[in-house]
Image (cartoon, rainbow, N blue to C red; front, side, top):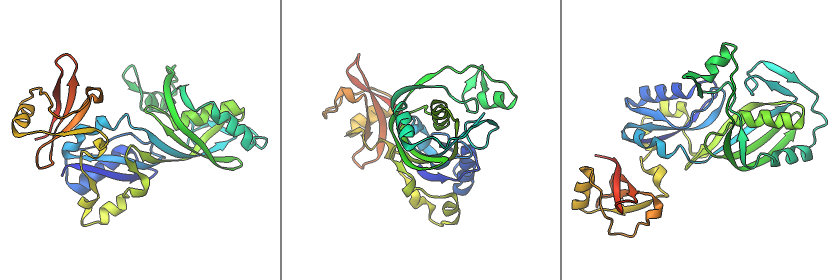
Length: 291
């Protein structure tokens, strides 16, 4: 079985555990996921089966949308409610206007420091492993992009925000930085990923639904689903043969070189390969070929 499952990961388990469950339920050995979710977070977790694991990289740069409940007046070492409390303060003077003003500082391109409790590595060791051992290391701030950040609700001391962001953005870091800016501290209480690329939580399947369904295959998206917005071309038999042998080709159809890459299909509509444009030769080179 080749394709992608839009799994609604429940809170309380790791993304790796979801992969193990899907591997057991489907019987497919090659299973992977895109975009790790923290154990306490829930929501969209695309799980790739079979040959589709080869296209995971093409989803990694897609935007993600999160909905988070943030508690004002409390800061923790993990930047979420499960961590050790570092600060508590009275947040009763924080108004919606102050929150809106503070949120404006986080829209667009910003610099963000990853949390110590993250899967990033320092000298080959995961940061969360160091954090659990009581070791704190300096983390290099990196640029991330917030496309959209909205205040959905404010019921003191809790606020609900929705954020659409680019790769490498940490909602927990944003919540912590928001607390610093407001002067009262803040941490994430509930976190849900509601969208990732073309996958929406409204169209996701729970692990329980997957377990109970006798026709789970109907929930599987084709492996080229994440490339549906790409340029595509239908190749003839000779071109297909060249592609399968790793030979670059000239495309007779008008695919703009600026596209950089495209999907090549055979006359039956089956995906043959992902092609990348080579500026030196002016030809399209097979990047990934699907037999």
